Image (cartoon, rainbow, N blue to C red):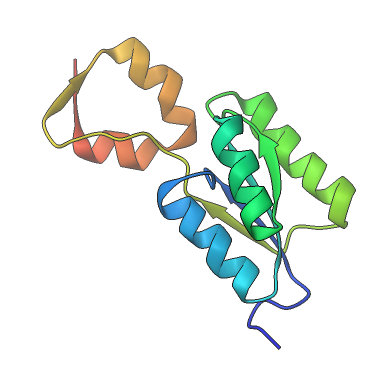
Length: 119
């Protein structure tokens, strides 16, 4: 029996990078995994490879974030674990326009504000 047997795990930003690694690990530990991502091509491929369930969502939009939870609960009855791996690549000393930060900030406020210069 795996560490996450009989658990429902929702991974936001699970279609690539660290999130995809979390999806693979959670499936490997026996969890029922639902994951979100903006790119359907990557999400559908990972779902086919792992047996996890993909929900296309851009978490910068609160309605899409809410919908991912609703869809998970409708399909599996609950969410036992939520992993927020959503983000976008930002290099140190990157200068981003304030309008772009405002659009991105709801999905990952700490990541952006701690690694970027505001302009």
